[in-house]
Image (tube, helix red, strand yellow):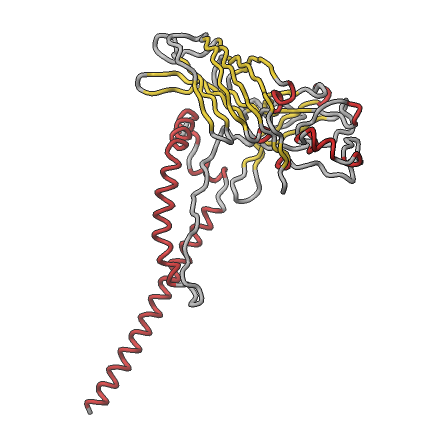
Length: 377
């Protein structure tokens, strides 16, 4: 009798455990399905949907600008903390579903990505074959890629190629508009900075193209190279343009920060205490000038030398800051590649400050080439 009673209790308990586990799994599955539906609904949201949820009256432009600036500052720390939290929460769950043949399943790298930027830097190089420089235009369209659905057009710009001087680098800022044909749009869509270099095809042109693979050859390599490979006037259809990564140019860049004019006032006395931070983006080398107190037209005349390992892929960034006892405020910046100084060797130019209400910066650049190498790969 005791045996039968124990057997009955065991069967009942087993059935109860199976039913409880099945019910728990069902509830868990339902919750996960509901969560997946919610996430999918958020993923399908567009910019227009978010604007309906939060009308423009609730977030004026100055609030958005302030939030973007603050988010850009704290994003690296939020990214690190949130990524670690997600890692510690998700990895134990993954371990429960890891197949027996796999010892463990962990994240090798986890990041939330980069924050949205209203001042992006690309530094990407593209080459196009020009059929008729007198009639053709270069058109640039900037899109907003949200990762979901089709990208939205921010604005477009166009520059006639007949404005380009052969062999000369042209650095221009183009105002973005909604429609290139009917330009009735008064909305500020920003600007895009381009650096253009037009090199006519053919050996007789005499213009140097620093992105040509031959540009990075040493004198000895040029002598040893067969003549059949040394022609610039090859058939465009059968030959492929060398990638920018195939060319490596080394040298010393001398940057002289000469002066600035018409800087905007940033303190209550209508003055500023400006200084300039010089940065090579790829190598992350930095230098800065001295602080000129109480001046909107400072003169520095300071020279800084940078060893550049890959001139074609680096960017020179000059940021003008205002020194303050309680910190520093950014006034504006100038961004440029090293293409022009590589071609001309030395030049001095005034540049308008990007991001500033007014002001321009005078800099003198000098390029001293060193051993020129090719990427063996």
